Length: 155
Image 1 (cartoon, rainbow, N blue to C red):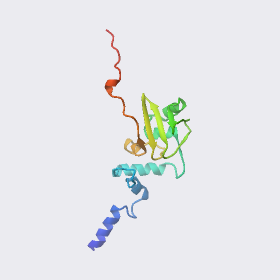
Image 2: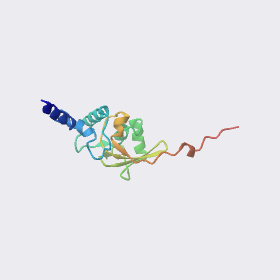
Image 3: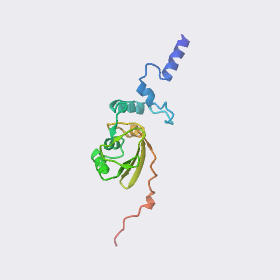
Image 4: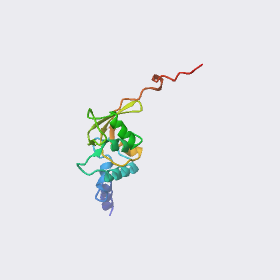
């Protein structure tokens, strides 16, 4: 009886048949993830992927940068694309450009340049812990507070 319990525990720890594949994949079993995810975050990532595009499908760039919280509103993402502030793989793109996994996205917004590599495609806006799991951030660090010139004061 004790050996059966031990086998069942090994099954559960290894992501056995009772656990959905999306949850097993979201827990960081791949080599790209350096640490396992919190169970709540893993469940949220799995839900976001389930609501996202199917295999081989793509997502609009303005929608993706909004969904992963690089931009506050989707209309700001649209405006940034139209203004030439969004580049994918070195090319200036329109809002309807289809982004794919592995694309490098450069975004100039609020005086800062963000450089991210697409890791997961999602369509719906998600919480910040889940959004961080959808891209690899290669952005340069923001300038220190002292480097920004203070506003002049009148006498």
